[in-house]
Image 1 (cartoon, rainbow, N blue to C red):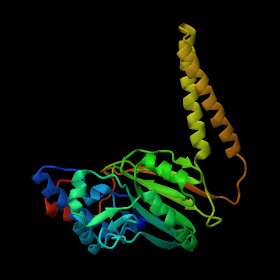
Image 2: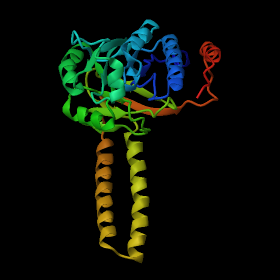
Image 3: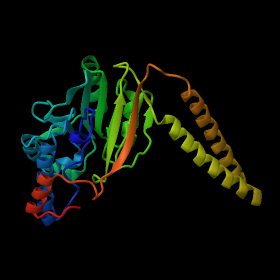
Image 4: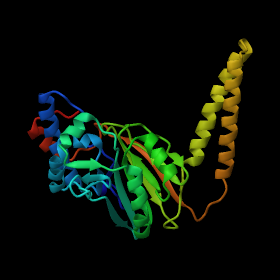
Length: 310
């Protein structure tokens, strides 16, 4: 990926990289072999930051420390050593790209399954993610121009965190594994996910003119127009249904969609105003299909391991 672009690239992973929940012993052995292969591949990839997700804890902390030794740059601000109350891994990293300082922080959800909690064996505890971020954000804002959160909290918690916290530019989420074509916006924070099982890779392109300030979505106008088109088609169908057989429910639905349409139209008109000094971004999803070239070294590792690619 780094060799296929003329622009600087950061490679990030939001969590739940290594494991899926398994129960049978045979599955566990195979899952561990796959996880070790992934760690080796990410080390070769020279990823910039990999957040620890709850499923990554299936084999305990020792496995993750083993992954770090293989070159996987794990981060987690709220996964703490039980005895010292200190972060087990780096809470964040800061990378300088073309003179712009980008801070990347990692958070894990505090609600984990009993099986995962048992796998920790009392060696680790998870602190409240929002409280952790609230303390850490002033430090990151003082050190960096852009703040990115790698989150394994899930979309609903991501949106709550964005409403509660100030200073996060982007939340790159995991856990839910949703296909999010258009970013969610909460205040000045944008929230995205790139789907599950590595089927897509998300690409976030940044154009920074005024470091430290908010971003605008370059695709906002196209997104709003597409949403307006979808609402218009739905509205026409509902009006035809209302003409055939009027009901109060249909009338309320039509009224609600017309309000949504007016709101989107207002946003579209506001979005067409000039913002020459704004930072801009574009989010896109790219399917990882078999036609894409493979890394020959990693492919040889897979073949030698006997693990089928899936």
